[in-house]
Amino acid sequence: MAEQTAPPQSTAAPEAATEKPDAAVVRDALGVGIAVGLSGFAFGVTSAGAGLTLLQTCALSLLVFTGASQFALVGALAAGGNPYTAAAGAFFLGIRNAFYGLRLSQLLALPRALRPLAAQWVIDETTAVTLPQPTRRAARIGFTVTGLTLYTLWNLTTFVGALGAEALGDTDAWGLDAASPAVFLALLAPMLRTTTERVTAGLAVLLVLGLLPVLPAGAPVLVSALAAPVVLFLRGRPGRSGHGTGATNGTTTENEPGEGR
Image 1 (cartoon, helix red, strand yellow):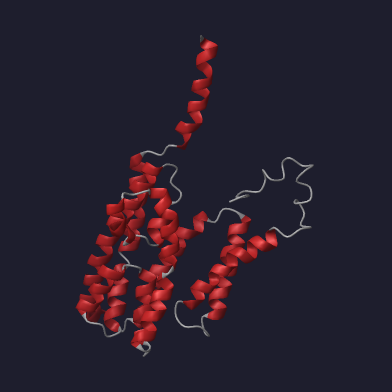
Image 2: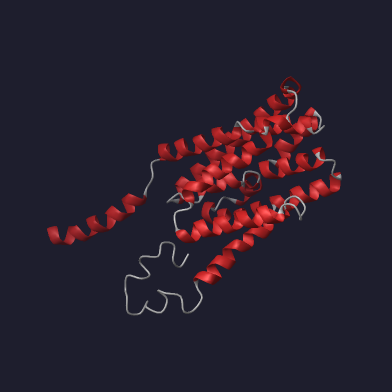
């Protein structure tokens, strides 16, 4: 009987190893939500400095709720850009959230009635917290806690920042518009574990910096997405070392983290 009960015990162990306590997911989600949510203060100050009213500033955070697009919009307006051009740049920058949604919709599998509400929270930070979770339950908890915390704090601090903008004086001197991108980069950096991921990120940065002076706001970020297919193409070219030895060296593919993703 002992031999018959041994296999179920051995197969249950790996499944248990993939589980993550709810408290740990909530802790991680709260950390991201609070850290990024507080940077809404920077947007409130920047928006007020660009000439937007308190109502306009708060409406952007309530309805748009994607920091990069919000900063791009008020930055273009502050530079004297046409409102329609500024809005178009912000729109194109926000397109990336639609691609996040394609992946998150499969992972979360939410009821149809909740999907329109959840779509408002599909942003960089909720995606960064949700995707690494090992189970659907953990993914749903991470997404919900991050989204709720971030949405609440972002809007509150936007309001406070817009009210206190006059007390800070010249908002450009503080460089507050860089706060939100800096926080997101801090979240993204630990996720770049393989050489392929680091090379892709580095190439994307170079594309953005090179195209920033010549393309409208938001466009360089979209073009930087081309870094991924370029790196994957170069990595999979015939004749590279390792691809020709895969049949004779059984450890070749095992030593390539992320192979086949």
